[in-house]
Image 1 (cartoon, one colour):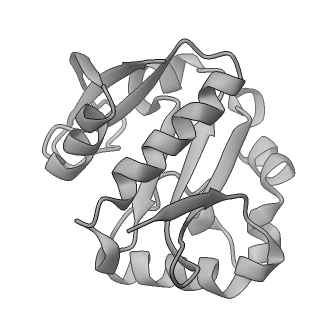
Image 2: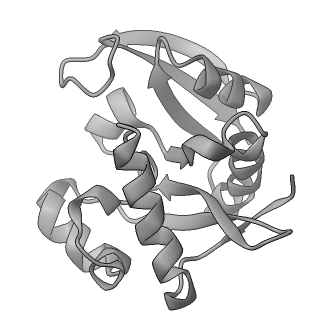
Length: 175
């Protein structure tokens, strides 16, 4: 079950694009994937800063994107990103960290381990606490956050249709 966080590189091109295909085929959102759903190629995706600055304009927030790669076979099983600093929108609805795991790899502890590892990156950037959000009905994400020390601050109405339930839970993890 060992998974390592690695920054995306050209060597991961096929797996990343296959990740997108599998997630969309399963009708999953690509949380933590830095807009992977918006691109046609790996080369377009990996140009995070330029592409996301154009998309979000003044609302752009830099992010650190990592692939969760299973050690035993070097398979990309998940993607996670750390966004910093928080904009008013991210503070209310999106949080510092987003992540997703391939449908075939869920329930194996990868999300929890990826989150545990990215908390070290957050510390390196000087964070003292990070915010994570999830749909009120997303039990797997809630367990992942709680396992890593998340404390529920509150629930907010989803005014943007981000989550299925219409309620977003906001959790803080103290570093």
